[in-house]
Length: 129
Image (tube, rainbow, N blue to C red; front, side):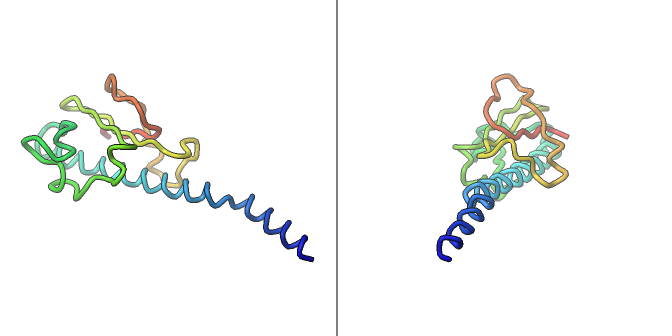
């Protein structure tokens, strides 16, 4: 009886794969955060007729991106997120743990590839609408 229960538990753990579920949850959060960044970048552009420089995004420069347009950057900004701009264009991306898993939201279709030379990095890109 105990061996049957342990076999069933093993099958359930393999099927559910809690580590993969946690990775997918973190990736979903990262996609959501970068979509919030997209909205904040658009607000910045609407008021300044240009996108912020990388320095302005991280809190420096003449017009601070945070906290004016976005309360704070994601905790993993330096490790997982990339941003570059060219006045009327930008690239931003995030590195995901499971990049082949597509999110369930309709915004997934707005994923784009890097357009500014040297932007590099990341699995999920955003760009101006």
